[in-house]
Image 1 (cartoon, rainbow, N blue to C red):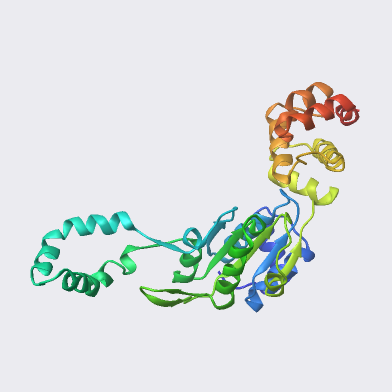
Image 2 (image 1 turned 30 degrees about the vertical axis):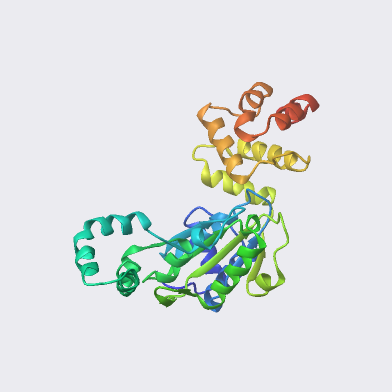
Length: 305
């Protein structure tokens, strides 16, 4: 597909995939493509940060490559590994050939030298197992690279990632330097669980996403929940947005709002009665203490009222 022509074009292409957004989101997305700069998307869990990368890939017809970050993530898991099992298999299959090679040597040192001269055969691209970063660099077609929850990784990995994103090339001792044929579009997401380095922030465009407004979330629910009554959609969203103000352990995400609305449609609910809310609250809330607090403090009665 063609590149974005404007921020309004971004809005239209995202809405064609049922992702509701405004100029505040569409403008950074448009600029990241035009400027070929990574986009750092920050915000609380469940507001749709990861979906931006998915919508971007869909809108541009690009393959999405995802790197899920976690504590202890290192270069080998993010960049590449050698397929040692495959190398061992080939070694076993070629043992007769290796035996012939070693017959021509007189000492152990000569044998080691002979094997060293042949090691490039076992450290070639066919034995390389690309992980997401290298997969994005080696891609023959333009791709979208999602680095999800970068704040969960360690400072050391963040520094390493910074080097990769600067040049989109990596050096592999056995193969040399591999450079991206097509520069990927990069989306990094963060739940702001730790402060990211200034160096990383400087290299990215920045977008902060919060929970949507009442009007926006009602539009999302109506769009994502076929058959829902508009009045019920309003009741659902008003209740969810009230819950998010209560400092719950796990505030409901947009996806959980949609799941709850879908459940209510399946149950043929027309409004949020006390009984309906009580029996379906576990679809919306995913923490026992939060559910008990809502029931104990009477918030379900307010919603039903």
